Image 1 (cartoon, helix red, strand yellow):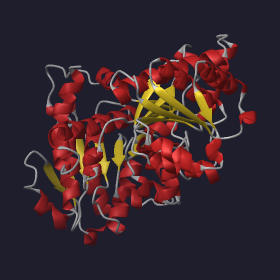
Image 2 (tube, one colour):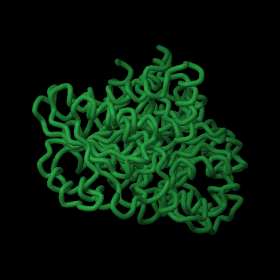
Image 3 (tube, helix red, strand yellow):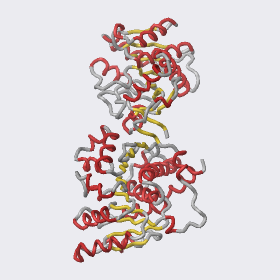
Image 4 (spheres, helix red, strand yellow):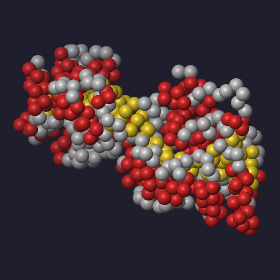
Length: 514
C-alpha cells in the first residue's frame, strides 16, 4: 500500500530528513525542484522545454523556493522563464532567498511589479505556454484573499496548462477542500509522499494528475501514516485461488435482507453483486408483498419470505433466524424500508446474527444519530454510507462530512466500533482502530443509481472469506475496477448498476493475473 501523510506528518518527515539523515533543507528543496522540472518537461511538453515560454508564480515561503528551483532548471534546459514574486523580497524565507538568488544568478528575471499592477501579470500569463504554481504550499490554513486571490483567478483564466508544486495554491492539503480561491492545476508534483487532500474527490478536481517525486531521503522516515492507498498487488495477495473441491456452501452462502414495495431493484442489485463477486449461494429475504415480484428477477438467487405485520414480532424473529441459519455473511438495508417492521428486523439481525454483515441504505437511515446501536455487533459490521447517510448517523450535514471525509469516517468507525466505508470518489475505509485505507479505483461512470447496492453485495461476498476491514477495502477496489473496465470500452457515462456486477469477474481476472 502507498502511505499518505497529513501536513503535520510531512513536517515531521522533513525534520527527520534534516536531523536523522543530515540532509540539508536546501538539498531537499533542490531535489524536489529538479524532480518537479523533470515531470514538467515530460508531462506538459512531452520531453522538451526548448524555447517554451514558462511563467513561474512564486510566494515568499518554501513553496516559492521550490518554484525558483524549477524555474532555474527549466531556464538551463532552454525555456524562456519569467518568475513573479507575490510578496516583498524582505519576507523571503532563508531557503527561498537562496534559490531566488540562484535563479537570478543564472540569468533568471524576477518581478514583483504586479503587486500594484495586475495587468502586467495578466499579459504575461496570456503569452505563456505553461504556468508553474509555487505560491502557497501545504501549510496554508486560511483563505487566499486580496491580491493573491486575484492572481489565482488570473491563473485559472489563462489557457496554458498549469503545474502545481506540492498542492495547488488555495487547497487544504489535509482535506482537499478549497480555502476560498484555489488554483485548478493540470497536474501536481508532490514531494516524497502524497498528502491526504490529493486522495479526495475535491482535491483531485484541483490537483489533476498527481506525481510523487523523490527528495533524496528514505521514504520510510514517516511514522504510521494518516492513510494508505490500496494497490492491485495488495488485493491480489488476498484473493487466493479456490480449492479444487470447493462447493457453493463451502464457498459461502450470503443472505440479503432487502427490497420493499417500490424499491425491489435495490434487492436484486445487491444479490447480483454478491453472486458476481463470488458468493456460492445467495438467499434474498424480503417482505411478502414484494417476494413474488423478485422470484423471477435473478434465476440464480433463492427468495425467502419474511412475515406480515399481523403475524407479530415473534414470528418475524423466527423467520429471520431461520434465514440466517448457516449463512456466512449478511447484507441488510438496500431498499428494505424504514417502517416499524424494518426497524424490528434490522435490530434483531444486529443483535442475534453472529457473523459478519453489511449495513447499507435504509438500515443506516433507521439508526440516524444512534451510531452506538452498532456496538452490539462487536466489530463484525461494515457500514457503507454515502456522505448524506453518514451525516445522519453523525447528526451533522453532508457538507460537513465532505469538508473532512477522513475525520468523519474515523469518528463514525470509533463510535460505532464498526468498519465504515464512506462511498464517493476515493472512498474512505476506516476501521475502529483508526486505520484508514483509500480506494483509488473508479470513475464518474459510477454516478449511477444502484451502484451502492451492488457494492453492498460485493462486500458481503468478500466477507465470506476476509475480515471486515479487508473485505471492505477490497470490495471498494473491485467495484471501482469493474467500472474502470467498463469505462475503457464505453466512456464516462451510461453505466448501469447491474453492469458493475457483470464486469466484476473481468476485473478480478485482471487483478489476479497481474
